[in-house]
Length: 182
Image (cartoon, rainbow, N blue to C red; front, side):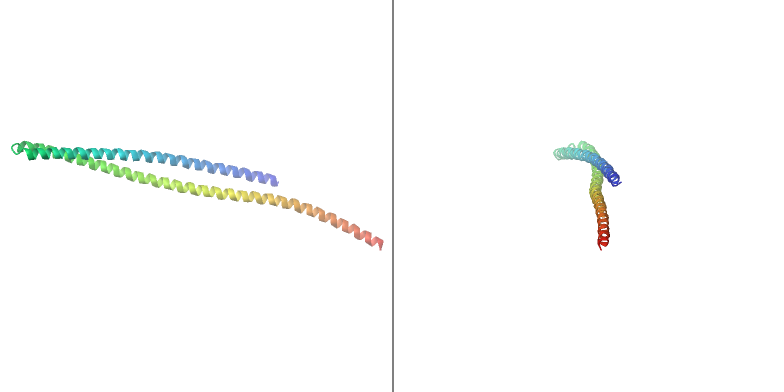
């Protein structure tokens, strides 16, 4: 009966360990997915920052070219004013595009922060699960050790009781013999 209980406990321990290991694997897979998403978002941010730099350079170049034309040509002032207006419209569009890109970058950064928070939360859950598994395994091992010691104790107790009964019988026989001799 004790061996059955011991085997049952060992099977429960194995089952529980397998379940915990499966949960840990699932958390690890989720964490790996989140890391991949984070890397993709970081690449998108880097790409968008490059686009912003390009727009800045392009706009700066256009402004410098148009400013030079204005300084050089007083006689063509009307024509240059019209060109300048076109240039300013392009700059406004470029600024609007830059603002839109900056907003996109900010949204991606916010999303990245959320993903980082989810990753930290998953790490904390994994740490808690690992600690729980260690505690559970330790408790089951102690319980198993207790059951083995209890089994040994019961066997020893049975042996001692048998020996005590034998000694009591022997003592009783010796007393009978002693009474008979008197």
